[in-house]
Image 1 (spheres, rainbow, N blue to C red):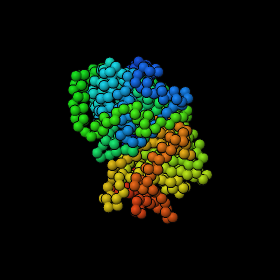
Image 2 (cartoon, helix red, strand yellow; image 1 turned 90 degrees about the vertical axis):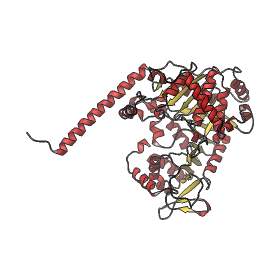
Image 3 (spheres, rainbow, N blue to C red; image 1 turned 135 degrees about the vertical axis):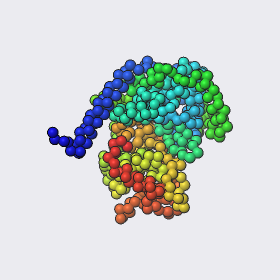
Image 4 (tube, one colour; image 1 turned 180 degrees about the horizontal axis):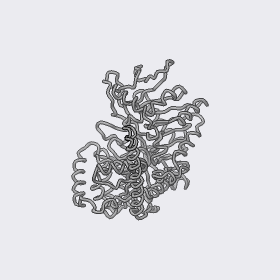
Length: 529
């Protein structure tokens, strides 16, 4: 009998292993689909508004009465403290419902503060629905289950793992369900009484609201009133009632190990500690939402063109035949970019344009349009792998005339040691087209936003709102805040800083990080970035 050569033996066992893993993966997807169908929560929908039933009704309705029925109001929230106050104040004013939808909800000061406000609202009789992506929730179930035990609170998870307690089993499940588990809900929305909504790029964590001692993100939201709020609620309901979303309690037959009394003690202790911080004290100052809306702090821009758009939940379906690409947000984003006649100013923290995106932007420059892009520098990014994908296209974009700016991690100081830093990180996703049309939301110009995650945002055609976003862009690319990247005649990259200082390599980064990014750039993973 002929003995198998070692190489043939390895190939045979490799093939057997691949077959076994494939079968287990198919079994895991089938098992998940069967469980998800049986675990669906009862359908529910946004509660109808009234002319004067709640404080927010009485605040918003007179503003709406001054404008056409199809016009929405939008206020730009570029300041992080104001963005947090808007969420806190609308939660405190709510008397009917609070619907919140987020990719990340951290267990830090900001996360605890907003959870506290939601529970306070529930204690007042407000219906609270929390929809959170499961990717960052490991170890949080007991607290969330204790919250969901409140008769006015329901918590559901997007595309959750069934294994909740074992890290190893959770990791194995994620691996076997990778095709589906890799698709996440990146939407961000905060809706109070179905009267006010906040949509944009901010998740719930300290660094999105300027409350972190080490890292803070530059980010943007829009506060909305009018028909755009109903659009936001419709998107929330579509996700809330979808097959991709599971009630947290359906994943735990035994319930929480926390009692309601323990949750109340934890909330009380947290609040006592938090009240001593400058951040929570600042949030409690000037808490009159009406003064903000009727004064100069929140400027509402009114237009019938303000629309809230989102990918459908089925974009995250594990099977390709379940995904209807025609309804994806990327086509609305592309239509906006293709409408450019004079200038495209783009902010994308994770910017991987690919061949098609590079061709689009280069084509605009060739047709005498001005194209400016602000993204993260290597020193500022929190995802070096994405920077590796961006770096692959940097020279080509510059050679075609696209202007590139990269956010600094902090002050431009040539005497600093060359170490990676992310004291400041760009997280805004916003576009301004021809100084009047634009977008603010969660959509990055990268393959993950286009093809994998569900995304959400606000499209508009309004010169006043575009002007605010333009000012934000111009401030972000000032020499104090960003490096201007150029290409020399010798085809070499240069980063221009303040006081005439020029960098010849990725600024404020160490050799190890630059080598790592070079190596990551060799991997065939662009579709996952």
